[in-house]
Length: 204
Image (cartoon, rainbow, N blue to C red):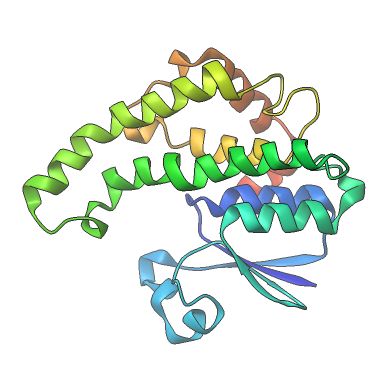
């Protein structure tokens, strides 16, 4: 059995959905960010980064969404969550998920966690001001060039889809209207209707 550590409203939702869709035997443990539980000694033994998600497996703990998503897809090939038999196609999955992790997520974080990058209140305020534009630019690229349709990689659903669903869910709080990106908005609506997505959101 796996143990999955998550917190509501975080990027951990992507891996949580993929776990549910994979058919894995797992238990989900909520980390209470309001109580700063991610910095508690017991949790830091699991994930010294003090963040979620974290997936405890028989082989050890895995962190970071791209790594967890790839692990889930490779561990449960029958779920067909990635094109595992095509190295190039699988690399494209990794490239998309890496873009969300390394570029889009930090663009969002500059609005809500500017103290990670600056101490000057004026600099933090400027990051908050700029974040909606940067998020919109990121999603304009996704809309035009990266979302093949109907799913991220095309006809086949993959671990890219719950990740995009998760990050797109932050647009409203970032002051960006998802309707400006019709294909992303359609993807988000279809994802929200999936049974596994509804189950995970209800449990959060």
